[in-house]
Amino acid sequence: MPTRFNPFDDAFRRDPYPVYRALRTEEPVHRSFLDAWVVTRHADVKFVLKDRRFGVDPIPERIADRHRFVKSRGGNLEALLSASQRFFFFLDPPAHTRLRGLVRTVFAAGAIDRMLPIMSAYTDRLLDELAGRGEFDLIDDYAGPLPVFVIASMLGVDDFDLKTLKGWSLDLSRILDPLVSLQEYQQMDAIVRGFERCFREMFAARRERPSDDIVSVLLKNAQGHDDLQERDLAAICTLLFITGEETTVNLIGNGMLSLQRHPDAWARMRDEPELADTAVDEILRFESPVQLTTRVAHEDLDLHGVRVRAGDKMVVGIGAANRDPGVFDAPDELRLDRRPNPHVAFGDGIHYCLGALLAKAQGVIAIPRLLQRMPTLRIDTGNLQWRRNIVVRGLTHLRAFA
Ligand code: HEM
Image 1 (cartoon, rainbow, N blue to C red):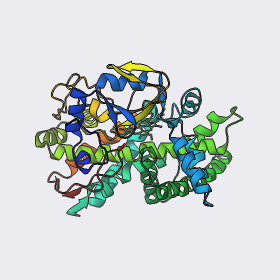
Image 2: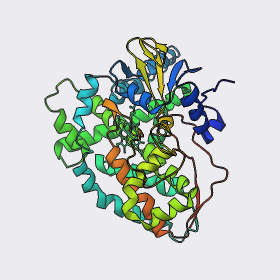
Image 3: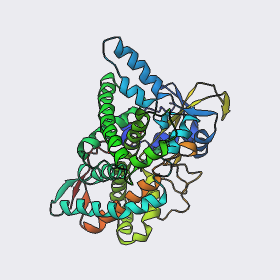
Image 4: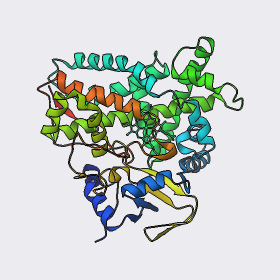
């Protein structure tokens, strides 16, 4: 029987790797019932991400479609549609280049170095709060709070409830998925309005009194771009929450699960802090927080003998590429000292993850610190619930015992 790629299937969510293996070997360009070609080999994934004959998947068009439908019934998805049309993640050059350029430097190495003590202190505070609890949820109580605190601090959002922002980011991350209900779109529309209100207030405050946060840098970089509206800038800030929050939660959550399943690696991670940087890359490869992304072909072309036509959709199998035995020795083994490690967990080409350094820094602090501060920690790997998102792979909860 031919292999079926069904990312909505529960068995696939639990363990997508056998399907990836079969596709890589038997059908590297697979025709999916999602009306898209699925590529799973490392070289093909890099090719589709980098070749300019492919462009972004026009997700805003999908939203425009739903917007028209809702409008015919007296409602609208205007805020969500407008923001999605401004998210540079969903744009090709030149619009992409211009908007990404406004925040290009805010996650550069120097900026991350300045955040290290703040991230470290916050991680310790979380661990202090967990000390003596006996049992806790590794996702809600540890992996979850850190990334939202970090993005909010870097943007300069300090007087807002982090739990609300976190919930908003999680719900909005579904915008990347191919099958989203109308109700979810309506919920996302309300969230986008909430984000926009929050950022507009900040813009007014920072115009009066600039600071060294991302919002202030953005306002400064936007000077001279007279056609840019506040909506464009609010969309950039919102995009940073969507892209940077849930992904990083899952780096920590998936990482801890992978370590629990590999006791030797767990011990090495705890005892050899100098290994953390390499180890986090391996965790990103092994259980990639972003499993796939999507593109559209702009021209006809041949791929492994398959004719891909202009307008065809592509599912780009990041999680599959990261287990390609043609590139990674023993790809199904977690080897914390794997070097080199040319994983594509952060993508490739012009949309390469803007927050890669920031995400890694959080993993490098949060994962070993947890193991060192809680030497008797154990994780319950039974009954795992994976989130229903298909782009982002992560657990809803992970019970831990200190
Ligand atoms: C472990 C955590 C993370 C992973 C695995 C991850 C992964 C990715 C991937 C695969 C892409 C490219 C998607 C594509 O080409 O379609 C991407 C893009 C992006 N990421 Fe991340 N990301 C992470 C954390 C972050 C963080 C912390 C931020 C910033 C706060 C961030 C901001 C972005 C942005 C803005 C883009 C869009 C870039 C563009 O379109 O030019 N990410 N990320």
